Image (cartoon, rainbow, N blue to C red; front, side, top):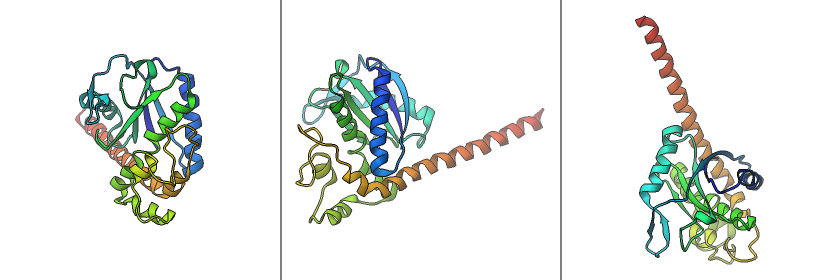
Length: 231
């Protein structure tokens, strides 16, 4: 799991790295996956917004696309898996939300907007977990492996039906508490259940990246040989 973290210039970098370390250990504990973070600084003091169907303000599609195009120009389709737009609360103009996730909307990435709460590390952690470690995983598994996780979850927990987004991510089930609810305790059960599928899905993406890198190295070698012959 490789994530480009676009870190607001107002966020203390050391605090962000400490939180990513805690979050990474949490993911590793429950999935066996060791996350890799590529942290880059971004100024989010001016971000164009647009209301969604609920009236909540979000960064415009064009703005998000420009951010991810810059990442794509450097990382390609599979050089990273997630892009996190991590915005300090003083720059967080996106009324009605603490974050939002768009999976496979911008290139082949999972793009996540997350609010940095300067006064509450728990809120910051939980928002990142909700958007980065919750929302995109069913789509990731479906896109990369062609597997619908809902029947798997329903069978595991002995329920008739199950909606990953509704019942797990947003806590509309007796089995799971909504991550934003007061008193929420970090819950790794879903990560543990989906771990084998997540490992395969992320592994497939990394393999595609390495395969392309291998091809690019062959192309560079051929071009170098051609240049030598032309001399």
